[in-house]
Image (cartoon, rainbow, N blue to C red):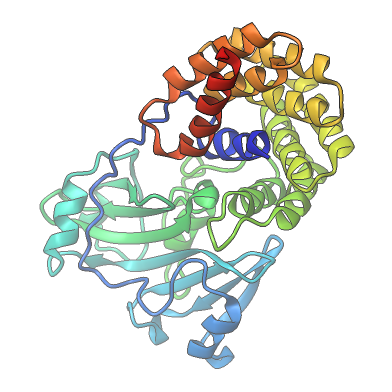
Length: 374
């Protein structure tokens, strides 16, 4: 069980590094109340209690649903779009201000924006904006917390920014909620009732992979990493299978989808399915330490300790400071090579010193070191 928890916790949670260092969070304070009457991860049934059907329109959003509250009926005085996945969980929201929202009354948000570095800068002609404002550069600014991302699309001078769009999303879906997506920019350029802004086909990002695959991959991550409630490997396995079936064309995406599906099967105890997916992942990308480590765990659980040892050894050869693989290598070596096991446990303990998330495994490793030294 310790190895199983290690696989899921370290590989999925922080990419398998020996001592994950969390970067400091960017400034995020805001005095502009947008996402106030609801919250990310809210169930649609609860959302609809506050927003009955008469207040919004509904449209499909891949396998999920988008609920739109028009500008005339919204508390924010902008068009509000709320996006639910197929499990009826709110995973993102987009606020569109076609005429621009002057941020002068919001000094806290203006200060926050002034401290953020633009991820994209460009010129955007918006039909509803004054001509002089359309001559200003627009910028996409990103902030957030441990589990969610907020993105602001602003225009105008730095000392008098005007907000065009704001999006909120749980992190697995972040690439699907950038205001710089062409489909979202088009909502500004071709806002209902407007005369139509200038069409600049080169502006805005478009997905190189099928939207359905990206959406399901995000759904799988959200379930696997417990972004909305507890970890749910049933949903994760379903989502990754759908992501693969939808047709990833990039082998990196496909390999990682198969890897994550393999981990989901591993946690669910379906070891042969886990083995098959992890082997396919390695066929696409042969030398990924996390996948080698997870496949090693599967092999040990299937009774092939020798195969597991070879995989753990390859993982630590590729990444010598891979603490989790060292831990697993130590456990698999105890019967056949106690001296090697002792050395690997000691290396593991040196790598994870001071990491609170490793306390349970550290306690186990220290106990095994005592036994092996007797």
